[in-house]
Length: 299
Length: 304
Image (tube, rainbow over all chains, first blue to last red; front, side, top):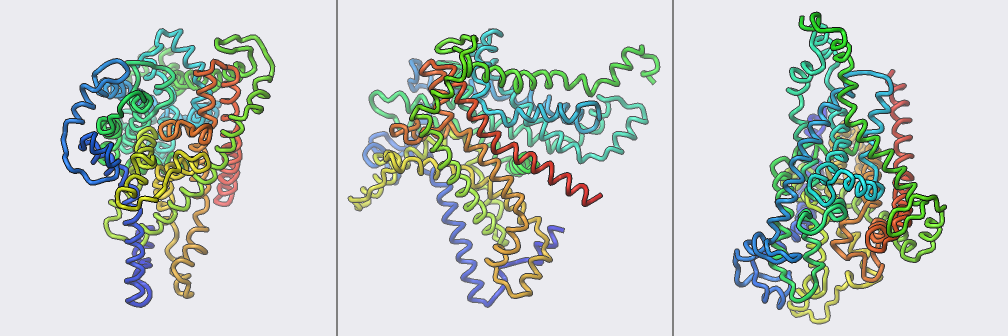
């Protein structure tokens, strides 16, 4: 339906020839202007991660490069001194990776099973159960900071990546359950009924019917969770310190350690390290990223 | 056939499997949503200061919070920032969606460009834009070096203008999101409707204004609610961009919460501020959820 509508609807092909040309110029001109505005931070930071410090200090960030070098990427990754240790951001990058991967896998795995159970089985209070789980999506982190600090302390997980994995898994399951439940609702109930008449139980139906249908929503969950947890700042800042902090905190610490000379080029390279993994995921899985957005927001 | 041989307890358990698999998540959600909320609520009326002291202390911390100038400024900032951020993102998002809807070439390239900020953290976004906005390193410097010596662009260090820097950066980050949802909406509009308007001789801008956009208004509501939520929770972006300054010019409620809880050792007042953030969210979300339910029910009735 939508396809047909689009075919019969080409606004730029209406009106006289000169008017068509003018309309086209306006559309592409505006798109080009906004594209430049959107891409400029990326270009500026990329450029400055190659420029010598003296040049940046002399000319600022927005200026053509004269001498370029890969050195600052190496420094940022392995040898720059930050918060008393000289290991660059590699340590914090790895922290974030160690935190993000298990939390993504755990929350997605729970979400898929929960979504299946909530969409294909009726039991008493099932809408209340779903409602309670999805409330976790909206609860502001500020309401949970003090309790989390206390609970993680009792569990012996203070200032640890395992603690952050727990926090992000519990919070993330709300999102993944919401996504998967809304996705599985569209699977015809007759399919499940037929399998049940054939004697298939909960797990067999899950393995044989639901799981083969899940890849699209699995990808949405993984992309959404990975980028969300990778980019998270507040929990990492409150619940960890020093060498256990994620990379977002390290980037903030960079600008906070205001004594002496600023190493803008090394900072720029570090910022790129912090931005690269989610960007990479977004570029290869962009279609699913958009689908996650639309299903998460509209439902 | 295995089922018949199994003991009845196993059979009964397997019938209960859907409920059993939900128990871990349900328990976690109960603790996370209900227990943690009540806990923080209780802290806000306790006698806690630097350390938790769970004896009841009354609502004095709420009164103190609303008397502190910093909090008032933060709340005012939230209103101004929230309004401009949501309106700006909707405006830019709608414009971009309509532009892309004109059967442009390389549609996916444009979409990728406008949406990529959403994949990047607020920390990275704020850090980069701070460099661009800062007079010593960014636009002002570049303009001066190009020979325009009197060029002056120091909003980020100007008390009256710094908040607009946060608004701009927020819009840069979020308008791609608005674009994606609005574009999906534009694509769902019935083509016959547009053709009919075209036959009537309406111009394209007029068709969009009078026919297309009004039919997708529920999407605007959804985007507004999501963006308001982002606005109320805004923290990282301000930390990376201005750290709430200059002075308290760009302080937002979430920054006050962090400061009270972890910098100033006023746990109870910090908890009270967190509860106020929750209240702001509820003011936005509860009417939306009620309205959505009402709409689904009336639509369901219409279909039945």
